[in-house]
Length: 152
Image (cartoon, rainbow, N blue to C red):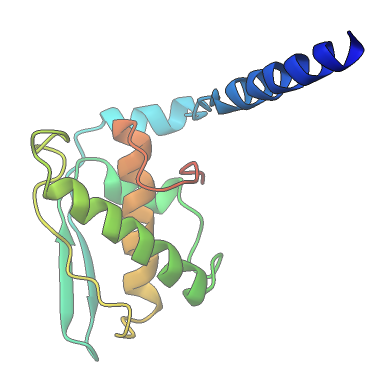
């Protein structure tokens, strides 16, 4: 009788543990009042991302991003260049996948692909501003481009 309970009870218990661990908790971003004000501002000052050595340039005209970058984002030097490059590589891949799926992801948010080559050294400033744009974008539009929360 004990063997019968153990032989049927363990698989059921194991199945229960597996199913209960599959439920994911959705973490909520903590957006401060100051950050909400920046998101709602109409400030459309463009942010230019460029590096003269690599001759690459990106211009971001996103309402509030310039103000957010100046007032809320971590300052330049906070992250290492290798950290920024690793994150940017992952975020660009996810961004580009969404651009290619306009029926699944909002084409008004994901308009153009980003040509980011991990073999090119874009320099610190380009990686810093690109990374912070991804953080701003995710926080403002409640998106998730990677496995981690977009924190500041």
